Length: 288
Image 1: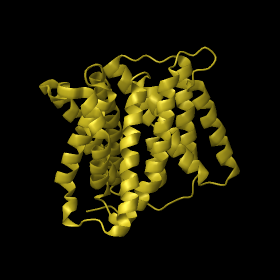
Image 2 (image 1 turned 45 degrees about the vertical axis):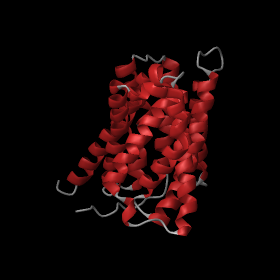
Image 3 (image 1 turned 30 degrees about the vertical axis):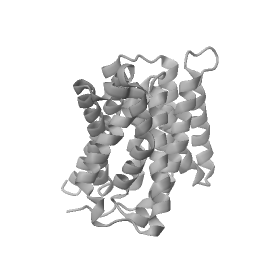
Image 4 (image 1 turned 90 degrees about the vertical axis):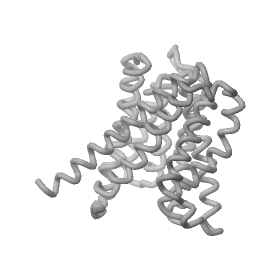
């Protein structure tokens, strides 16, 4: 029992982190009628950057010249990814937007594999994605789908360049990347939102979005990563689309049809299958 306890706690922490992200996205969507997607992104990134810098204090070890290139790309991709995702949320239910965006990291996992079984997961993911696209009379906004697919591409790049940046610089990568993303994207949002972004209830909601979408999940995921094998971590992350759909239902009243739920389930199963069939990795030692 003592050996299982840290893993059980890590699983619970990861579930809390994923739930926090999806509820953060739900609260962000409530700001769209007032602040717009870009304005909401500006608030989230600004507050997130302040929190991350206060906690991680990256000024104690500034990046060297070799680290700046991957850091810069990582920051740009992070900002564009959030902006595209929030624009997708403007017209798509949360669960569907998350499921489409989730094909980005799924593609990264599958492209790194060469096994015959992986083609089964590719086919299953394709079926799920096709089920979410606006075909055969489905009433899903094409522009929203395009933004969600762009966010998926950005998420794949985020994984690739985030790993490079973290290798070159360290854990404070997310703080510096968040600052770069804020500098790039926030001005667009401040122009779109204008003085509305300074209203007290908008600021408070923006702060809540930043805490739920960044501060809480980043911290909990790091703890979970140190206590779980990567395979287990990736499998659990496959729950994100379902949690997004449930958060959209609970906060936004977004009801999905059977076809949408089946498509989300197919993408989740493909992601879990791709993770489980990957090479076994030993669990990192727990951090005391």
